[in-house]
Amino acid sequence: MPMLRAFVAPSCCALCCVVVLLSLARSAHSQPRLTTTPIASGLHTPVYVTAPPNDPDRLFVVERSGNIRIVDSNSGQVREQPFATFDDLSTDTERGLLGLAFHPQYAENGLFYTYHSNAAGDIVLQSMQTSEDSNRADPNSAQTLLTVPHAEVFHYGGWLGFGPNDGYLYITTGDPDSTAQEGKSLFGKVLRIDVNADDFPDDPLRNYAIPASNPFVADEQMASEVFAFGLRNPWRAGFDRATGDLYLGDVGENTYEELDIIPHGSSGQNFGWPFMEANTNRGIGPIAGLDLTGPDLQYDHTDEFGYAITGGNVYRGDHIGGGLQGTYFFGDFITGKLWSLRYADGQVTDLVDRTAELQPFDGSLLQNPAGFGEDALGRIYIADFSLGNLFRIDAVPALADADRNGVVDLGDFGILKSFFGTGSKWEQGDFNGDGAVDLTDFGILKDYFGTMSSHSSRMPTPEPSTLSLGGLALLGLAVEWRRSRLDS
Image (cartoon, rainbow, N blue to C red; front, side):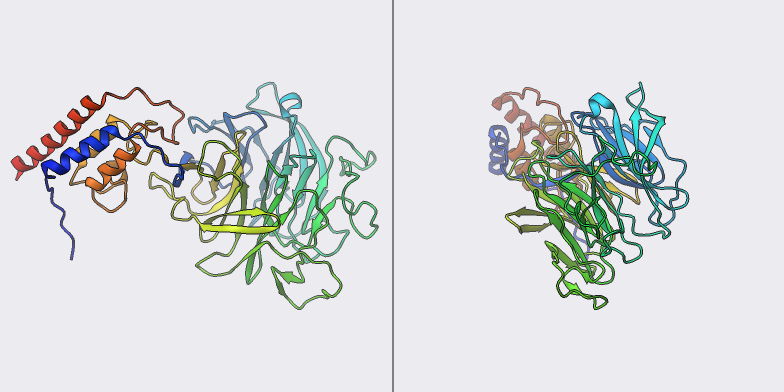
């Protein structure tokens, strides 16, 4: 039967305890709970988010439908005019605008690189340059670096990123025709090229150079661009900017999803597709004698886990404490599951299901995580494909910041007071989520009173004295108690 909740006035002793604890508390929690903060909405099929080096105020969101949008990372405002628009584009099934990377010297040269499928479905890697308006690309500056014919509508890969240690451009491609084991095919691979030179001056479709340290430069059976191979559809990837390790979320077929990690300083890995799906032999090709690299993590196709991995990023920012440095966040596109783990010395540890924890703190939905990304400060973002929302992973040191003004203060106390005994929502003061605004929530407010919220960059304003705060708290509760007696 429904539970009826009536206002019960706290005893004088309990009330005094609450007032004293509230007014004296200034403690900060060393192990913060995580959440996701809504940053922007109204995006159309966002699949990736990134930022130029040393540009902490702007986010660049890749919309698969063909636009790159600029989001103010402080206000969340989406600029009405896109940074760049791609018209020669097919968006059928898995096609579209898929990747974006800024040159390491973007501040000096204005160069950035994109990965999309053209109207015929072919993969096009191109460079562009920013115009005199830093919020607009110059459409006349587009230059094709690489074109790969692609006749299918699926398995495009499409992630781009510059290595944090070598400055080369890394590219992931999917495998639409089961040629990931064929050395001359560029499908099902991680490619690595040097965009600062051109080894093919007579080839208008290859405007780049091959790094001398690429693993198959001297192998006539392999394309010299190949850095690693044997992948099915490495949908999203990301470098650990501190270590240089490369994390690949490779979407499986019928049975498994896998996470593959290429440690910094290594290359040439064969991850086994199409002969292997994760650690399982599919029985369709010879594996004897192959030097295969198994996944660092795999999970079954079930509703409990998921059906399409979305690779993420390693947290290297400084706005979340509690030892989260070096934590990798990733998810599943179909089920919306979100996880974190740690990787060191070739081993994955500390796998944590963060799905419930990383649901947006304001009650909005995070449904289909299509891409993760970092800003210039190392903060991690999640793009929701279906709903067009952008979220940031944050700590919640100020759990009781009900009015979201950046600090737990008298405003939050006023909100809790107003809904004491009647409220049932977080923004009404139900900070522990038990469906009632009660003394337990006063305890949470006490614990965080005076602390700064991770949802705002504003500094805390000076708080009133212990005596005045205690008096106001006592008076506030007394007024509410008296009002409840009169109403009854």
